[in-house]
Length: 155
Image (cartoon, rainbow, N blue to C red):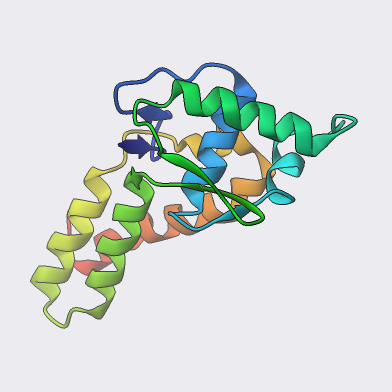
């Protein structure tokens, strides 16, 4: 299963509706396969007025998201939280830019950065889905995208 967040949120073979479900999915996708503790999402999902029992409300959202995702078992419970087992365009972007940063050949570095830039499909879902939480992550991705012309690529 693939989740794309470097542009409008897209999930392979699924339509994820509802702002909170979309926020939860983006939050899990940002973790890049790492566990997200049950304490983390409530602040992102209910920034102004959390529900009376955020744990139960989160569990309900997780159940709804599991039914929405096209791959059974993509969202798993782990001790103390949840983990999304999905490929993401942001993860691929990170891998490509890291490889580019380690490569000594400017032509190869530029090619890797160009590949990373091609993953962008518009304004990242980060800001629209998560607001403040994603601000730093979105800025980091934007900075990485902005260095590409300096590496000899198009720009």
